[in-house]
Length: 205
Image (cartoon, rainbow, N blue to C red; front, top):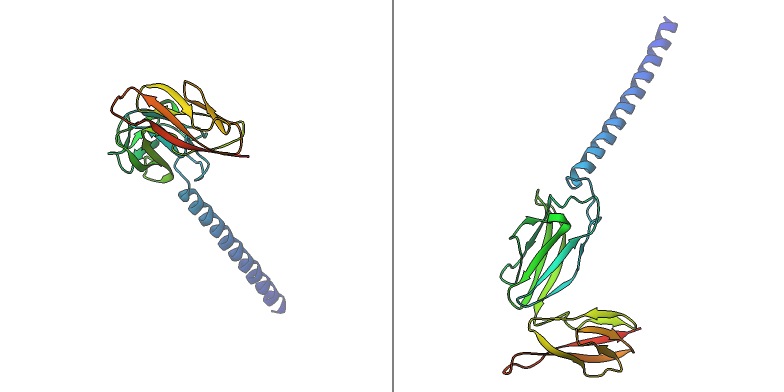
């Protein structure tokens, strides 16, 4: 009887240990399942993707191409839409895919809005601040030696810098940062009754 009692006690201990192991394994499986559910459908964690440019400036009545640069994001299930399509709207329409990894956005009216990148299940990945203006970029900051291409709504007949010591600009609108300081970049365009468009460029080290 004593041997039987000892055997019964050992069996209970083993069964108890097995139950604990089963519960632990079930918890791990449930946690893993939850992690999978929280991931985007194509298996890339939130924040692993990017779209350029971000932020962006689109010249009024012009267009700008946005590029999906991260992999393995699938452009066929990644959507682009505008919070305010009256200011900026994807060329293919709201909530459309990135064909070939790119999407063209039109500057409809001057102002500011956001582009939103989601998947076709509605999960949001990132937002892109967008400004639509007569001249882009608006009041940029450059490091010494950096260059930046300006764009304008109107056909220009020349660009010039108020203080070329700090930053110069070519006749095609390419700005080159020279020294720490601030200058104003102007664009003359073919509009006899309009004032030149301009933007302030700040140069830092």
